[in-house]
Length: 456
Image (tube, rainbow, N blue to C red; front, side, top):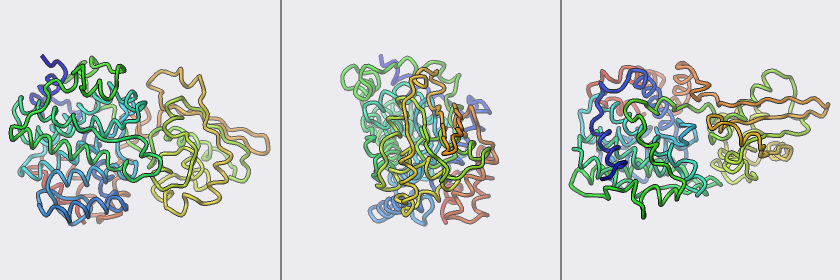
């Protein structure tokens, strides 16, 4: 009767660790490691500290750890804080074909629920996280770009369902309660894209999705019910409400359980919106291969498609770190000036640096009709042209950002990224212990041990 909501719920209930291919598990471990690093680093940010202080002061329950802090809270509030911190500096994993950050919603909800339940082994945890990723990505694949055009954040919307599935799997809910966990959580999507223009609140979208999933699973476990046709309902259903007529639900279940969308998840090299990544790669390569200084630049043109222009090619104003991370002009300017675009390039004093603002005046982000005609797999492509005052021009097009599945980072690079982020809060020894535990996660008897390593 409910072909899509029911099918996803049945998949989540039926899937066992032995059903998941080894290459999927191996990739999922990378996703988990990357997510944990982003979360620990997120605890050092102003918004991370606000969230951890809020949940600690308002909820003295000590079920689950708040990463990067000595505090604990209820599972739902820990998921709120940890999801916010993972998404807290635009470094979390990214599925480019299904625009979303699955780790920031799914891993915090699954780990918080596992701590609350207690004695959840690594195989069950990996299975739950795999389910959460798969559902979130498939939902975002169906509606991510349609949602964006309406001003909605797909991680905040689809993440509610992915995190609910992961939490419900940890709680071992039966088929009917699994369905209701998804149905309850689907009714509380979060995230308006207007937040990208300078507000802290965008960081909250993933945390709210993680929290909503935990609450949905907990309520379902107690007999609370949701709308069984929540995804496909013609009036007020998830897709009709959030995508209008731009939805295609048939993609939700194609090769479900046989083809894993998780394998399309990539990793970020730079702490900024995904639409900036190929342009930054192009600028870095041009700089590495050619000797010139900023003072010699006459003009910079960045040619992109409509989507990239709308998402990050808007006029820059120094209104905070969030605004800078979501803006192509700032990211390109700081890369040219400092030779990098890392966490250190987003300090408050640099956002309004006169050298940055003056260089931005030389940058044009332009829609190129040819870029709009590229196949969807190249949706993130950018062409960078740098003209020097001498008349020399450098030009480079990058189709796939470094860290994406078409241009992957190595395992060593991902581990190094984790260490750099985690060591902002925990010791080198503890960071290496986390890496070792994630590598053998299927052998771990209680993933509460992993959570215990995430605190300073």
